[in-house]
Length: 215
Image (tube, rainbow, N blue to C red; front, side):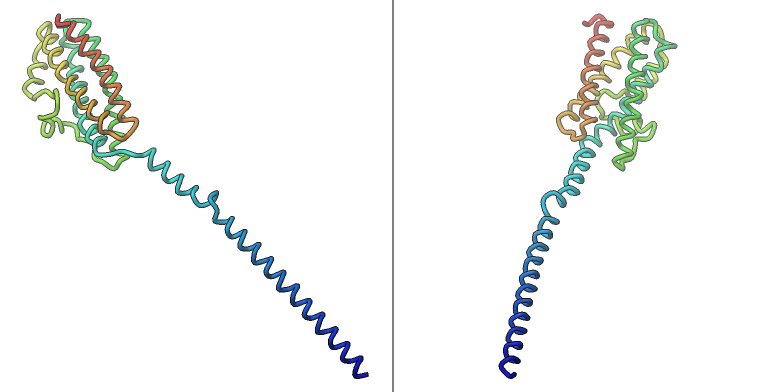
């Protein structure tokens, strides 16, 4: 009887040991599986995505101090050109001068709105109307208040000559400002606008010199 009990006890012990081994093996396997899953969960496909998106977003909205200076300088510069062009319909004698003035107004008025929109989106202040009278005396090609009054008080051939001579200087100043933006700016749309200003206003300078008989 006692030998029988001993055999039963030994069999039970072996069975329990076997079961324990199986449980340990299973736990070990499960732990390896969890570690693998955890590693995959933090793999290259998941985490770089947000930072990549943030980087792309930053790149698309990139601008620098040169872009801000370009926009803040070109707005009053364009406003004065549009003001000069607005005098032509009632004062110019030459049909070519009237046509040129209309083209200048048509091109530069929308650019003022675009430049203002950039400054607003960058959290910068848009130059107030009339800022050219107080803060832009040293800006390339800008007319003084006396020059603007003289142009406004002229008419006929005298207006044509004054308008062309003044607008050539004005355009030359804008071209220099645009070249600075192309060299130093970081905002793609702004540097592209600068390129368009250089191209279109250089062509208009040639046209105005021809109208003055200097071409």
